Length: 177
Image 1 (cartoon, one colour):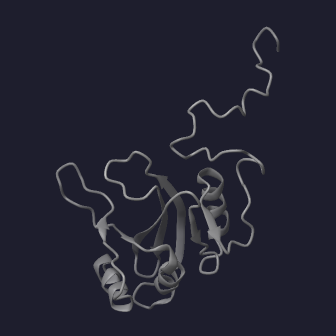
Image 2: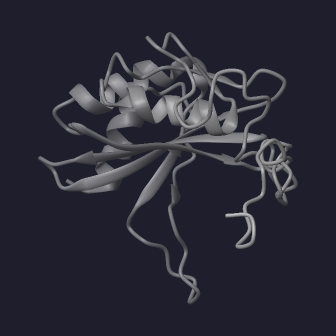
């Protein structure tokens, strides 16, 4: 089964959605890779992901990764954040990326931990680094920084030298060690 057939299956099941499929990468010579991504609105994310996992034509049995992109000041970007789900079908041997776009002031998407249990830590990492909340997550708390940390380190508006978290520690030099 090809990725085009997966997209056809999505369109057949969700005729009301515009998935806007696009190649994941366009090479310098202008040719596109066979790998594709589709756009899914947040309010339909769990429904679409459940279909992609359980439908015999798609069988995306593995959630490989969940990450995010901050499109702040990105030319032509309509939304601030994109939450990206990387899916793999071991049975059919194909991949698909699903993008779900959200905006400030409270970026939030539904959790897919009910579809793939392995999404738990991946969603927590995105929350910790970008501040994107996952509605319905069973244990949404910080995983790389500490509770009460005042910022989201992978947002484009986060200062390059940090936000004061390094200033509270004594600088150790050769002479003072």
